[in-house]
Image (cartoon, rainbow, N blue to C red; front, side, top):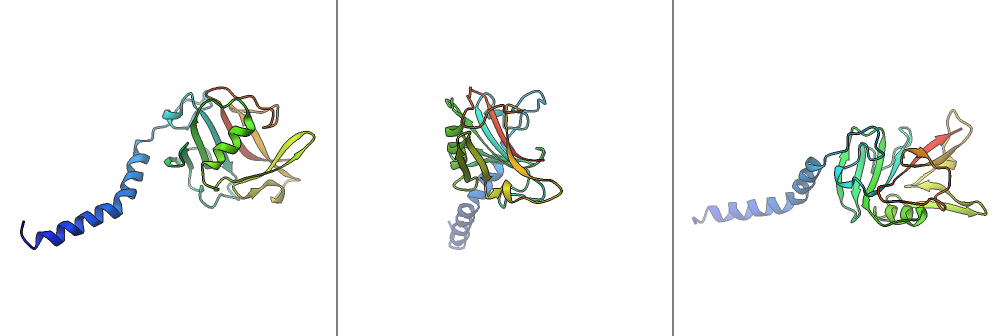
Length: 183
């Protein structure tokens, strides 16, 4: 090897090392394919999460999350980003690939913890159970607009849950979704 190629080789290796995370993320996002079935609660979620338990949190357009504000970011159980579905209806994050949960509250808290604080949850407990008021820094009680009040609405497999997160019984393949609702 000539002496002039050694510095170029070292420079090329350094550039590749510096770009490796960016290249890995681009390939991962490119490889993510999403369920396209409007009858499925997994519609818009990664195909690799089919039949797995998933938590999604969607934010209103006028109160976007500081990190999850361009499409819906798909986060694996280990905290890595699988991809971003910009065609998903809204912005926010979904954390998926879980299995084995039977109770809603432990699943909710453990799945939000995967994001390293980005989806931190705050709630009050009363005789009726837990009242979730804040997810990822957005406190529904502090929202203002052309409405009387707002709250975090819980959907279970695409339907409004008839029970609170404390009483929610989970099965394999369940999708839990939190979104802001108003009255």
